[in-house]
Amino acid sequence: MEKKQLVEIGQRLRRRRSELGLTREKMSELADIGAGYYGQLEVGTSQMSVDTLVKLSRSMHLPMEYILLGEGWEPGDPDPVIDLLKGCTPRELKLAREVLTLFLAKRDHSKS
Image (cartoon, rainbow, N blue to C red; front, side, top):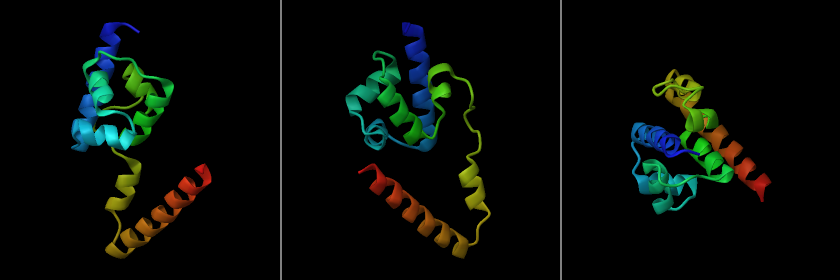
């Protein structure tokens, strides 16, 4: 991959991290990668493996295509899950939280 492409990927990662209001350290923790390595990705001095791409895509809620090519998503695009939750009553939010907690616990258990 060319240096220019790595820098563009880094810019997209940095922009999304800023949108999420996270520090580099917190983002790297969420993605389960080293903070120094994540910093290198943001400045475009390091390439990422497919495993790292998947981790960043999931933790940043971004399509892999957007991270690599800048296509398939635009900064500020609404998150459909957030949009659904915005219209909920406090009781519905509580139920949604419980369902999501159960879903994530089951998913994590099935990975073991």
